[in-house]
Image (cartoon, rainbow, N blue to C red):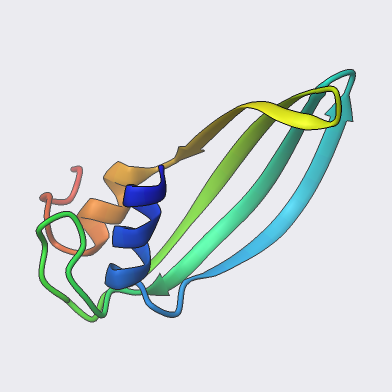
Length: 91
C-alpha cells in the first residue's frame, strides 16, 4: 500500500480527498470518500495526460486494542485508468 500511494502521489501530485461519511459499529469503521485530481505525472506506467479524475473511494478499518488490525481500501481504478487514457472508454 505504501508503494502504491507513493506512485499515486507522483501521478496525481495535488490529489484531494473529501470525506463523504463515516460509519462505526463495533470494531469496524467505514470511511466513504471522494478522490479528485489531475494526472500530472507517471502513474502505473502511464505518462501524464493532464486528465481530470474524480472517483469515489471506501476505506474499511478494523480495530483491536485501539490499534488498526486490518485496513481494506476500494476505489474504481478502472475509471481512473479510463480517464487517463490507459483503457478505452466502456461503451
